[in-house]
Image (tube, rainbow, N blue to C red; front, side, top):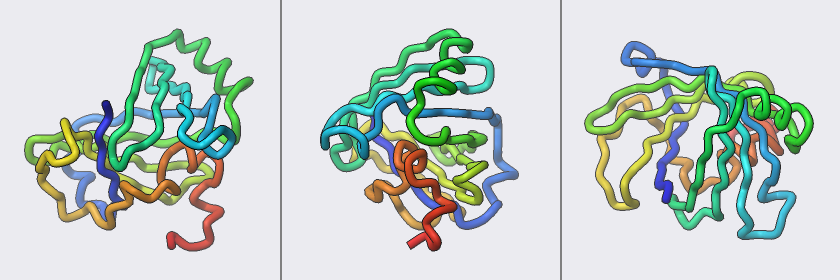
Length: 162
């Protein structure tokens, strides 16, 4: 079960605390907008020199079922080129320790630039966490900010953040 909270990043103050960063390119083999409501989303992702196939169940608030499997990078690149629906999501993920958690700050490129989002993964929906000053508006329940939806309707096409 994946439980995460997502926030729009308000400033660059997080940059001085980055402990690691990795380039991620991901695409969707199935997407909620192209399937029946409540169906799973299937994602393929390259993350640095590794690759993964991920199946995510429908969201239930800020939680959902997730299964992830490492796959050969060449297979992932072929899937991204040949099977991904819509444009791929291109971003650099920065790891930023805050309190007892490591936050992931994603700086999006391409059609989703200049979006910068931060997320923190929790053990359960009620788990407390330290809120950094640079984390702004909570968008955990806004489906527009799900990566699968950013693939279908990129941030740069929104006109305004809304």
